[in-house]
Length: 575
Image 1 (tube, rainbow, N blue to C red):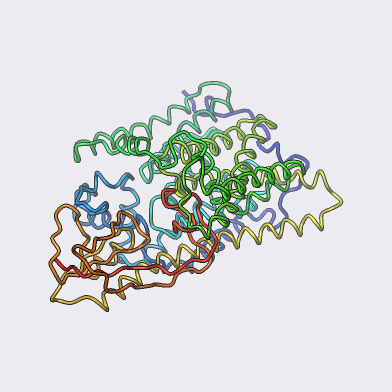
Image 2: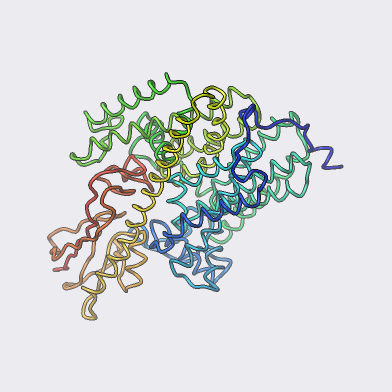
């Protein structure tokens, strides 16, 4: 059996969308310099955010990483209070432990500081952007544009400033896809096997990485039009994931792979499970998380589609602004912000339609295996994020960002072919879109950065003002706030077993998860601490409709408006 004979496809041009268009002139023929430039641009963009406080689910990965230092083969063998009750981490954390192992390795040498871990997570971010370029190089003539569009999406930049599993998963995903394409083209067995191994690592960073298996399988059959020995490589991720399921079942009494799958699909959503509201929010998250780069795609489309998009946006805006509901469900936005939220919902939803339409359009027009691969990549991710997962959030939308970026780059050459005489004005418009894309992505990232840091500042201020050896300091809320409060000696309330005494203090954040305002029967409000945050854009504010990390907080990935300071209520226990 010879791999070269079984897997080597017939040579064909994989870039039909770029026919008749010259390649990018910038650093043409200097691939190494281009990759160095992309890596440097990624670092320069993310470096200002490396001082970001640990945020949202970051503490879960850190606690598991610290556990790995003690018992390397039992990362989830500890108890955590994440929902107001003491639970085993194996029941709470619905992500695999590879990210925590990565953290543990870094922290073994450099410690657990915020800046250390954020710098360590620059590496997977760089790999995602370089991987986008390498894959786009095979699929279009403008790989630099594809990498630029992937970098300056709000969902990528915001996710890259956290230390959760999403970007690490996507880094393995991009390199696996690139190596699989190269392996098929060159008939290289080692590339295909390495790609299959990287698929397994992607899934062990975050379970959604498994979605790459059917994508690559269908692409391979469509490309070669027959079953080949290359498909046997998928036994590698299948075997590793099966081993993971068996091992975790033996350790924790439940296979964590299938347990996570049931969790993602079983929990109800406040927007309904297969509803118009859920679909609309999914479109809004797709458009908002991709940011302004979808305007590149819209610019290449016929002018009548712009009119259709305007009508769709107008209908969504008028309906939601008038009734304050989405599919009959209250938006949860304060009265003074309904208009802003409605406008963003309409614009973002049109962006989501453009993203999905872009994928379908290229697949139908070109009818090649590459376009269908990208189309299934985008549509599959959207279907999971919007209709299958228990909540729509930016982290679920993230995997489609490189595919959308490549689709945009594949479609861009059509402009020059259609309007050769209007290049100067065209460049001005495209330049304006590029600047807008950067501003939107960096603005959302900066807002999330300030929001995360506000929890750390609040914990520090509360400790300075209220810590006393004569009384206990209790708190509600989780995410990064819990991490920093526990570091200061505070204790998370357990709603079942905690017994606060008269004179103890209880801190309740206004904007957090799993909180319950205590009654006046046993507490007295003695102070309200306000911590400044971003004033004009928010990623997690119910009154503005922003819920980047969970649509239960808001129907938009980020929102613009008057953002009030983060508030923390200080109660004294009276009995």
